[in-house]
Length: 301
Image 1: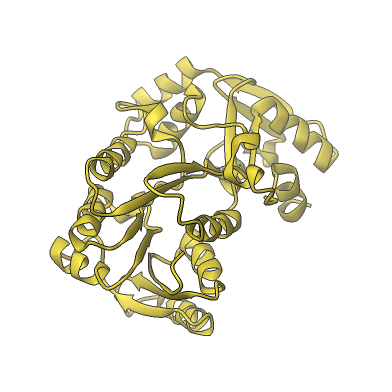
Image 2: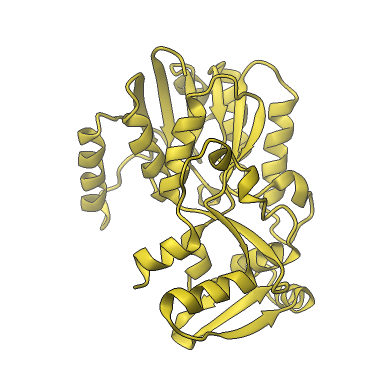
């Protein structure tokens, strides 16, 4: 990181707030967050509380809507910063990731971290069950084809909490059941937003990391290990049910717009969704991260 780095973070959701807290704690940074203009609706008071929290962290706020703002206006905004970190995910709308990338390149911001905090899209490739992933590959293609802006992609795997999200259906504690996506040997890498925030700040402090994909991992385990971990930590015996890939593909054909079914099929394929923790940036730097066992103890006991 430069002696003084002027950073703009896009979004202050669960991941955005985790990244903002860690960047604001660095001694050589000035941090600003871009938020959508506040609407006078039922969530206004919650948003006011968030603004107060940002103010206490010393984080400045600028307002713009990534989905509706013209590309050149976004480029003009981005150009006032050294580093741009996007924490705006798929909920920002189709095409937004490409729009932000084009604006970043047009702006001549020095360094851009796009919202790719997830799986290894290069390995998954085009035409996967989750069609939104193709746009992530378009973003990578744009960045690799230019030399105006330095870029960094941070691959994190799935949010750890999503493994336990009832709607996802992998861990259904209310039914004492664990479902294996694909097979019991299929692996998945998971990381908490808090660890992603810490590691993103650490990675940005290393100027030699540029124009590459950096892999981090809170934990990597297969679904058999997940079930065994739940048994051990919660002192119970969960029922084990395998959801084979052909079944999950049929489920998706029956409801092709169901985003949860898309994710189940992608993770069941087992490509690009896991990497050895020992090979991760955090393991090589000896930075401790929260394992699935530790997450269960913290959130489910």
